[in-house]
Image (cartoon, rainbow, N blue to C red; front, side, top):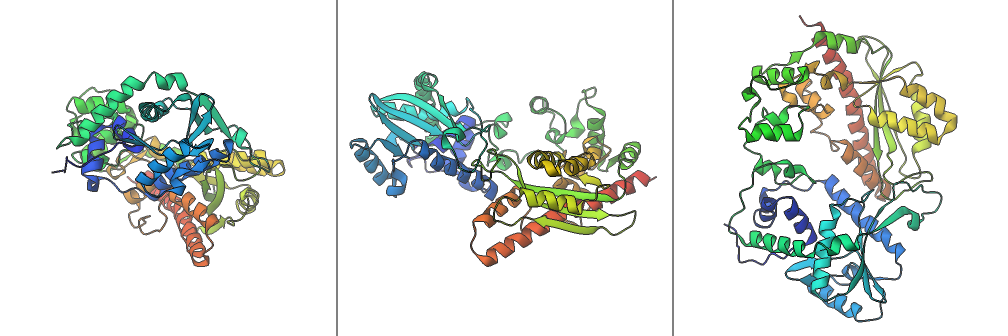
Length: 498
């Protein structure tokens, strides 16, 4: 049983969690061992948010940062009070406590009539959901008697294009939310009281699973709350909306085998349900044959890796633009011919886009049939590179026109295995049909980890670490294209099977 006598002050992360689910709020404080550990990619998003916050300080220079000058909450509270009583005009990350709620506003600027509060977000657009967090901070500031005459949200301007020097005035947009936040004071107070009552309770509240489990964020307690569901549950039916899945669940339909007769399903969904019911793959041989007929030798199995940055790094780059830095290429000249592997991994120094595009054109034959898995990144990146480098445009767009997408036969239900559990990513397809190949033994296991690793490579000064990262990136990307080679073999086997 949890120690409910322990003090549980609210913070912005806790408040955000509580607004999504009261059960998650209680579990986080009392049973944290039940949560899924924070992975590197999620931590990287948090780090990016902090980095954006630091860049936004340039909009309001010459401030004092409380959290950098004081190392404990008590000292931070004391320093905040001292600085607010001084002549300092701007505070970064001051710390306040009121009604057992601790807040750390991003930026406070002194005005003639009090203070302006700026909340900085790394989002590329303004989201109304932000207002709940901002309202909590205003609730605390108002409770302490601090006069706030203006409240603003600062977010990334995704239309900004970086040219030679960073223009922070263009990089950010400022949205005045004063009236919308001040009208939420009473609602915020009631929410605070409710969350504090929940935190003091001896047991977690009974809350059934629902769309809130992944909206607006995937809850780290989802595996605990969803443990009663099997891989054959209705939530694994692809193409059904979340509302449809939860409606079935609330009606007591939890497994695919229990689907009511006459429930409207597409042909692909009927095939999927049948595969789970019978425990064997379902095959549409004509669909497979038609798709394979679109593939002409030489087959060029191609995969890109790319990273994003909220703060543009290179000339002509927008915030959050995908910057390709690596590709793997397996070329198979004909049937039963062993594929040859080629690769490109950019230097960690400078803009990789020109060398990436030139290497791609040099290695991918002009008459090659380019096979990708979920083509959006590859096609979009080549189009962007074509626009960026007009002299390479014809060659790049020619290759875009030759792209074939290996996800199609799986999305259309031409081949489905219960082991796929309603998913179509290559990381799901591979163990279902080529179990001897696995990403599990790789250091880098997915695209987000690859992007994070390349960003780490750019910052590292350790020679061994850089060598290890480059080796891991090469192995991961090579696995993606070799997996495609093997998946095409699988499609041919099933299309020929009697």
